[in-house]
Image (tube, rainbow, N blue to C red; front, side):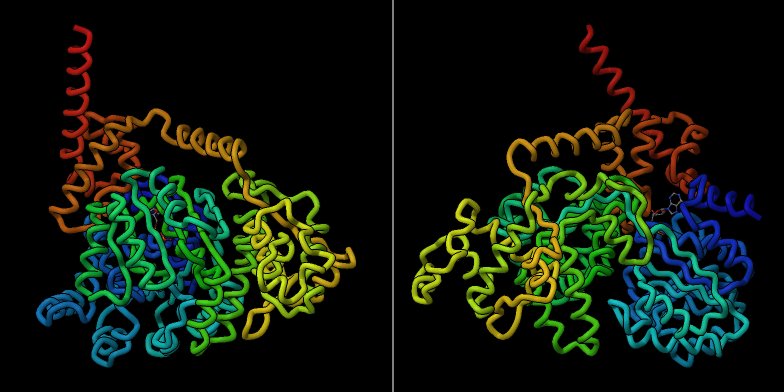
Length: 612
Ligand code: ADP
């Protein structure tokens, strides 16, 4: 059976090996066992059910939460020669009728559908009349109250097991904690399911989490500049921030489009299509609308503000580097983001759970530590490396402070000195020794801690206070967000608990870090003709616009990179390129071989001319 699976993978997708857990998940599905598979974004979940769909008799029904995601998947499957459709209300009546006829005539291998649509009596009736090989529940965490994207219509999927008791159900998600995993199994009534819990770590992503201060636009521009025409996403917290950033960046010459729920469907769709078809390489979007954006070659994701949970952070950063190539994730967070989310979430039906998740994320941001290790542990796995070499902490970009206890004690003593009645900004003024009116009026210039940290900048002191709040040594309380001292804070005063505190690396050290990053990129591109890569990208963009499909559906960046490395000149050689299956070879082999041929001729001609 393994041979047949591999042949199918190579024939349609042009891949010659599996990623971790794909093969196990596929074999389980073929063995008619219910499954729950957790793989990180970009881990290759789709292939886990698409390959068995081709090997089983009948049609697979894939339940997916977003129309745009369904459409992209279906377009891709059609491109590689697989019979798939999606059924949704945005189609005309006659288009829907044609798809229903295809289902009835058993001409489909995969049907993508939303949970709302699936649960309508006419669709259930239609499906009872055809052979279904199995059901797939994509983004299965939406079923759980404990999850981060609970959708009430997912809850109704529990009745699938009763309605179609002979069919197996296979649930997939990228982000599920233990509670969520249990809930998925219970709600979907999975029968002794096989659980595949793939490595959650996204080792190709570099995480950087930076306390926001000063010129955020400048920080963002520095990242964009590193990537020139390569695709990136900027996530903002509010719609008005999206509009403001988008406008500002456009005015600075960094062409981008906005994307948020306040825009008309038409504008949103147009902007998303422009991004997917590589007409534009930068999109500025709200955090809430991450799911609809899909492109496998995104090289960087910037959070201009903090998202609302670790799950969201993992999912949104997960959109970078789905093609497995190195990509960077920057988050600029602040306490204000925390407060804004707290305000937004106060009316949520899952308020307590949502606030707990928010607090956990804030702790994660403000606690200097290996980011990969934390994320992996959060989702219940262990991380073996001592140094991930792919986050601000392990790359040495944040310098751990040698005497954290002394600094923590100074700050906590100051909070005690003002009887826990003042906020972070005032505490920072006292410690810095700023003679503000407020400091003088309250007589705080006479405190023992006044000017105790006058060698540090106020920004530094504020940052350390945030770290102490994030790590639970200080608590923010009440309407006036005053700082209080927690039990851990009291322990720190007594020397029984020691926080980990860090400051940003400046000057020479920062240059060293940048040098390291550059060397890593040079290694990844070793042997690749970057000029040819650009020419190939141009061709792909033309084809994507002609065919009206996202560019990555034609070929991924990894495939283009492999072409620019191998420079194939025959169909046989082209077959050996990563990601080229039979249908793609027939459809695009000639076109891209011509591009390579023309390029080689041109370079040789230019070479001869310069030697003559
Ligand atoms: P997920 O749904 O888990 O986020 P996808 O199924 O979209 O991930 O896969 C991410 C990318 O990885 C896609 O471009 C896909 O074609 C590619 N991919 C999946 N499996 C393999 C494999 N075995 N070898 C190479 N590339 C793969």
